Image (tube, rainbow, N blue to C red; front, side, top):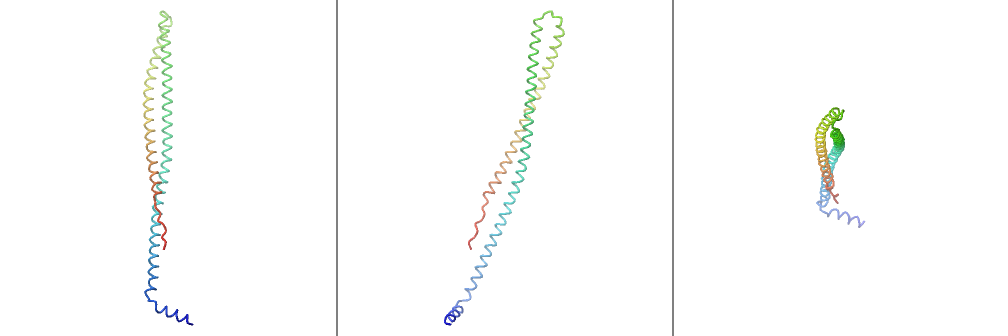
Length: 179
């Protein structure tokens, strides 16, 4: 019974403000938790936006890689065609040299007129091959420039993705409060 009296007197003697402090402390804790949840929500929104941006850049990277493959194929084709026309030019030049040698050694060859006609045809064919070679060289240069342009676009996209990844890594998640 003595204990009960002590307890009742202790309760009556404790100022009412002490009970109010508990409510104030709880309110502050709840407000702090609410702020933390809001901050986490904002961080999550920001991160999700960056993830979506990264997905878009990744899709663009895939498209750009295909563009580079096409540009690279065009360059390979241009080089192949240039090599082909240069080989044909070499072959024609060799035939011209042989025919000129044959013509110079056969002064009164009955086929001289026919050989001269063939030589003229080969010279015309060589000129056409030189013109085609010039066109093929231009096509090769254009294809090289296009490939370089596509590679620069890819590098730009890779840089964008690197920045996004870096910013995602730099996102500082707030440490949970210890209340």
